[in-house]
Image (cartoon, rainbow, N blue to C red; front, side, top):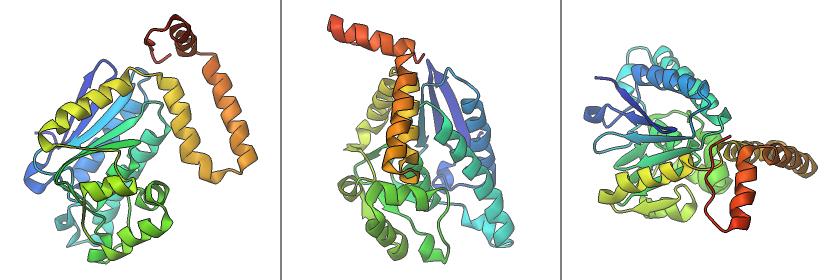
Length: 257
């Protein structure tokens, strides 16, 4: 049984963490599987959205600490290095990334969820960054994602206090975009992912990269980056379709090109 289930359907790629007996704790095997899947995604221009979810009762309860007891530094590196490369690849693609969350979202699981462009959570989901509780600093991009999502002061509170909070609090502070009933999570996640997969993929890619790099530029530099991105978008077939749909007063039928 694969620790990461990968399915594809009309431009939508689903990555499902599949260690339910361990609450989908991330281990070295899963990290390598995630990297392999993200390499495939990055090399495939037909991918138009990515949905990350977890099998069973939890999204992901963090890194698998049992692997770190004998040789902490080596085991941590075997987990972190492939996961970080996987996230770097996902950050560069055009396709937006959606996280579907339930149960426990802790440690590296919270970091992974925060790295997504959008996140939807079930009622009753519990979040805890948790690294400080085991005497570790964070990984899997949390120090980059959290301050951008919730602000520096709140990100530091989440990181330093190591306290749990629920889905409604996650929505309130901007960590997730939507909260739905647990029984509706799969259908709502699929509908949102499908909507993204039917959107203007290249424009999505330019917007996600503009926003993800905006903190690294001055205001004039960001304005120039926006100008270049818009002009590139204006040269696409999707832009022509968007204009036609606007003037014809009908929904646009984007092809991601």
